[in-house]
Length: 176
View 1: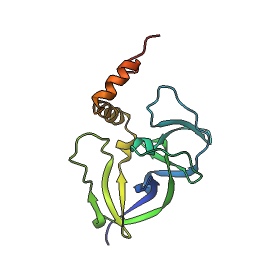
View 2: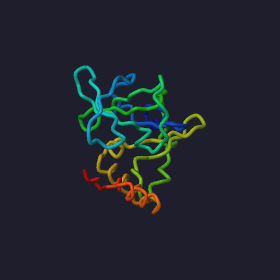
View 3: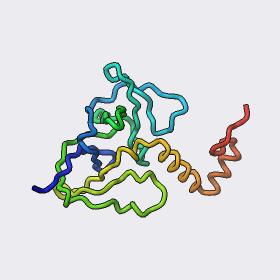
View 4: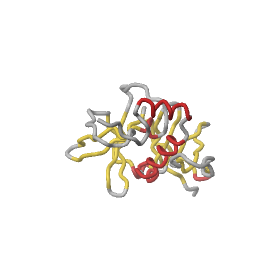
């Protein structure tokens, strides 16, 4: 019997992504999210899920996608990782997919520098590609900080000068 991966498929932008179904706790509509001060920009805040506080990440921001306004189809995938619940805001949750292990190829970005390196592979399912994500890397705050620092280092020199002139230099504080 051929080994299959069971994943939950969801959309972020034009792409279909997937995480292991075993990590999924539930899928909920997006309720009011309470902002948390000093959180990374991709952390939307927290929600109260039947008495449990769950941190919520916006996958559009985390994956570097342009961010349109909230849609009715947006959902939060509540996933469990290392005993903690986290919410992932996605454009829509589609379906449970069964992908044969033979139809999964390694990530073409494995050898590239930078980024959050959260793609574990690409699954082929009914003529389309599903980007398989590693929850550990996706939810890892230190990886996110490194990728944000790398992005800041890649800013054009003119943008850095403009930020310095306005007093909003990356990493610097504007005197009061």
